[in-house]
Image (cartoon, rainbow, N blue to C red):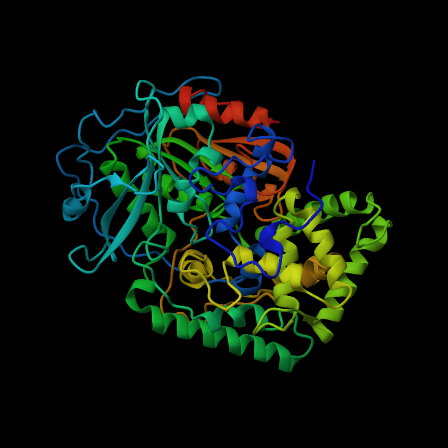
Length: 586
């Protein structure tokens, strides 16, 4: 059953918290507070359907990133020679056949790993001082150091914040499970803090759940390259220019903000690539005592997992990539996947809405899309008024972003319906508050340090190649706009937001990824607006040992989100090493 009223964080008078993207029943309770009931009673299996909201804390904001990062620039990040210390490189592992089991992952009592570059020995052998986090959770917190530039390990360092939820059954413990919630820029420390809501009791019994804030993010030597004003400007600029002058203004603003970010962020902002985060994860693997990396990544965290597996294929243990995207995706593929994900998600919402007597879009499914387009046209022309100081009038940027965020989970459909109804009267409080809660902007106009917006430009410009606007790509874009007008209005202008970024990034590899890695489980929902199923299927195919598992569900986030079939398969893989049949559908 769905709650028909906006959630508390969607109301305009409520300032967001680090858990603003979570429904109230999933936020950590104050000491001694009673457990809040879920939609169908106390915390139980039904409440798992909304656990996917955890990822909304810092998921890839597909709408904003599509507008600000469609055509990107990059080349490889320089690295040091991989000189082995004390042992020969491990032989490539042989992928295990579906249905078979992989060997249990050694725990901390196993032999020390010395398979790392000599120049990085001080990082791989540093002492980690785990201490109680001090919040009564029973979790342990620590910091570790990694080089800002792996090509210059004697230079500047990032200090990474790490949080561990210890395995609840020491007798069953199999090692550590590193986790990343996506973003880019999501806080793994917050993710680990919510481990009991994100992972099954069986997985928590078997693994230390270890989350970390990626370099430059949150508590990990944060790089503040965008001001609060910059981030407001990201939403304020007209995303759908109707003239050459409006488009020139859009591009000028993008170039200015990107240049300011690069200057303000300095050298550290130039070293926030996912390739470098993957190398940080290998340091963590050794420091937690595991010879193989066990990893669970959601959304953009799947990109991180794929990059790690391609960089360190023989170090892959049990890896689950949930709601995935492939590092090999081309611009045309990404556009195709985005359309598929958006269309399936908006159709699901409209089907739900028009069956209700209070649907803001009426009862005619065919006319519903047109009403949203008409609303966006009116917003572009007149804006929406709000009660938020400093944002008394908002435009398409905030409105489109907020609508898109409501599609991430069916739990937000009632909020979207109520927000659309209010927007049709010219007011935008509910939609604005929804968007503000996702990016952690308070009523005073201040953004949380952990918001993924701080990482958006540095990571995106490092991670993705720039594709020239070829005649074929331009034709595909124009046809997509004509065939999918609502998607076009939600996505906005496609352009290169990295033109003024001072360094290049990753070169797209293409071809097979992670040759020699153990089986990697790739899972996704059939109707996911953020990381559409097409990208999930592509990643499973691009990985040499990729194993695909799909779920016939809506929303973003697949594991521990309501499907017993998915949960059983993932738990069996993580705990027993049982690999499901490739292509299994739940």
